[in-house]
Length: 142
Length: 320
Image (cartoon, rainbow over all chains, first blue to last red):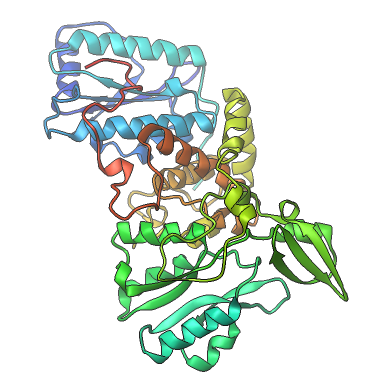
C-alpha cells in the first residue's frame, strides 16, 4: 500500500484488448499517474467479483476492470457476463458504504492507447479526490 | 391440520413412497420446535405444525445427493422457493421429493413473544390473530404484534410447489402485498455513503464469524466453501472488521439470484446482525435490473449465467 495520500489502484486488464491498449499507451510514451498496478487476465470475466470485494475490503483505494468492447470479446461473450456482474456488484458495494467510484469498469480496445491513458488519469483523479479508502488497516501479525 | 399431515405421512411411509419425512416436532423446551426425521409409521404422532416452525427444511435436502430413494418434507411458501432453486441448481431432482405445502399464517418472532408475555405455553394461529396460552388464560393477539419481520412482506404464504397441500389460506396473509418488501433497504439507501459505511462497519465489527448464517443457508451447498479454501486463503482465522466485511460481502454476492428471504441467517445469528438487510439489497437489484425473482420457476435461467446483448451498460456509461 502506498504511503501518505497516494492511492493504490488495482487494474485488471484483459489480455486481448485492454492489456494491449495499455501496452500501446506505454509504447506511445503517454503520460499518466503512476498509482496503478496492472494485472493481466485472460478475460474481464476472469475477474471474480470476490477479487474486487477482497481488494476493497483490505484497503486498496480502487479497482478498475478493463475489457474488450461488448461484441469484441476474444471469447465472444465474456464481457457480457462481466457487464452484468459489475452492475450488481456496484450496487452491493454502494450499499455497504464503499463509494461507487472505487470500482470501475471500462472497455478499452487494443488500439485505444490514448483512451487507456485518459481513463487511468480520470479514475486516479476521482479516487484521489475521495481520499484513502476508509478501511485501510494493517493485517494482523502472524 | 396436524392430523391431516400425519395421515399423509403415514400413507406415504406405508406405501414405501418415501424413505423418510422431514417435518417439525416439539422441542425440549416449550415454544422451541425442532426439525424431525420420521422413518417409521409409529413416529408420525410427533409431527406438528404451528406458528413456531421457522426452520427452512429444504436445507436438509442437500444430503439427498448421497442417498437413494425419495424424501418427503413440509414446506411453507418461502421454503417452497428453496426447492425450486435446488432443482434449478441440480442439487436435487424434483421427482425425488414429495412436498407437502402448508398454509403459513406467518411465523412468530420469539423475541417479540417473550417481550409481550411471560411463561407462554402455546401459540396457535386463528384468523387474523394468534391465540397465546399463558397458564389458564388465552390471549388474543393481533398477528402484526408477533410476526417475524420477514412475514410482513410475505408474497408467498402458501407453497406453490407441492404434491399435497394442507388446510386453507388465511385471508390476512393473502391480502398482504409486497409493498413493504424493500422498504428497509430503501431506508438505508436514503443515507449518505459515509452513514451507510458507519452503519455496516458497526454491524460487521460485531460478527464473530461463527458461520452459522452459512451453515443454515439452504443455498450454501458448495462441496468446498470458498471461506475454507487454503490456497488462495480469502480470510484470516482471526476476526477483524476488515475480514468480516470480506466475508459478508462475498456471501452476499453468492446470494445473487438465490436468496429466497427465508430469513434463517438472521434468525440464527448470535450477534443479531441484520443480514436480511444485506441480502435484500441484492434481491432488489436483481429484481429491478433483470426482472428475476429467485425460486419461482424451474425453467428460469439465473441472472448471472446468462446475458442479453442489449443489456443496459450503466457501469461504463459508454454506448457501444
